[in-house]
Amino acid sequence: MTLSLKESFIEICKILEIKTLIEAGAHEASTSIEFMQLGNPHSVAIAIEPNPYTYWQKTVKAEMFGVKTLNIGVGQLHCEKELNIPIDLFAQDKSPLNASFLEKKNYLTEIEKVLVNIQTLDAISRDEKLIPPLALWVDVEGFSGDVLKGAVELFNANSIRLIYVELEDKELWFRQALDQEICSTLRNHGFELLIRDFEGRGQYNAIFCKTKDFPIVRYVKRRYLRMTTVRIIKDFQKFPIFVASRLIRNRRQERRGNNFYS
Image 1 (cartoon, rainbow, N blue to C red):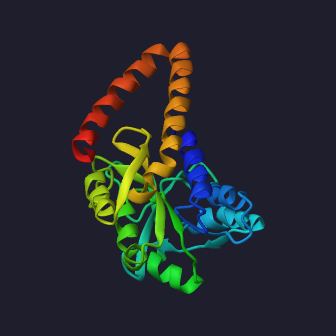
Image 2 (tube, one colour):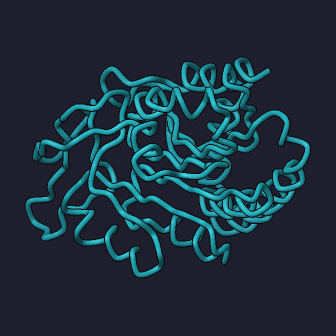
């Protein structure tokens, strides 16, 4: 479901004529690349990846598509912070998807700690002279709350129009902000939940847009739901027991979420 959610995000960027995308936790910076491929000559994409191994192996390659890349972290304050990088001792690749500034509750591999410079979204916007409207893509392994707290000036100026964020409804990392806290913060800044998916147990991705934009992009949600339904039916035909159990679990998560979003 995450793939079609990403497609929906890029489509909404086009509809809202987003000029600038900030991708925090970029990894290969695929979202930034797709954003630049929309073809707007004035578009700017900033792909931010804190893991130095990932940055130099993968993220920096996005620059050939016109993406600006930064090997820093994003947080609430300008500081230095240790990044926890899970290391597979039997593999050469040190660019895992789940490096985090928080300690995970169930790390099953060796951890390498790397000191990384942290900047706020506000500071990055000032330094890069970013032009609104902005969209945020935040995929930072439990650190989303800190990332969004560093965007006070951007929120107050109504510069941000669209947000994709990875959320957790239970604590997978120690001292992380859970979905209800983050969603409440976004609601206070005038954002409304448009679409969400189910990435895994206790974890999902969501797209938020400004309440005033909601009617404009509502049809994107309807198409996303149709696409998701078709994919579920196809998967169910191949793996009925697995899909049925997944749907039951997801429905329970959705009911818990609806208690908050209603």
